[in-house]
Length: 314
Image (tube, rainbow, N blue to C red; front, side, top):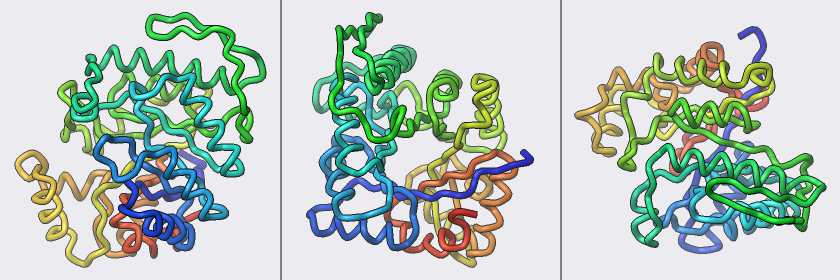
């Protein structure tokens, strides 16, 4: 790629046990120069995302608040559109709206929601995206699909950001990435989830990432140059001993029998090494894949901050 977007960095959190701790996390992320603070959407998360994102927005002034990502099957898209528009209004236009199919079997089993096959969930997400985006427009929306039906939906309020808050859709399968390429503003290049609700760890390799970006480029066509490519980096350590850190992380995640140290060090989902090595690695990955927006998990927020200071906006 001849031209690159400037780097942006985000923090993905699950919340905190108290309001004071959550507000402190959001303010600290803003102080450290992160562009976004996002919340995951799981039954086991410490806080539900909609209320927590509003609390984070109220406690800060410039950092964007995001969902990474709302599970589509947990809310009707007409209801989610109203919630998202309200968040955008009340945050002063700082929402990044992430939508996904939902993938964790536990999120479905505990509340008794049917866990449909991946193809069904992707098709349902495609319909939901159409409804949400249309609802943000100026005209009432009617839609009849296989999974949803809305009639004369006249959404109030409308979001501050027009035509809608930036939409993030990501995944690791060709179906989801093609959908994201056609509909989203931000495309997440992620590890593929499995039909059973786990992760396909073989999909984190550089070669697999090349394929994912190629799928996005093919599906996006003329839109590709307008897309921002994003990835999650759950494996982060600024260290002079990256192999030791990689071994510890693989053991902690319980995947040492499925992912090798060399594989983890090479994947764009891991940022392991000295500060200089991580900075150069991010630049090299932006050059290779076009990924300029990287989100780390909240426990790595402080440790990764020196890299944010060096690269954010560059």
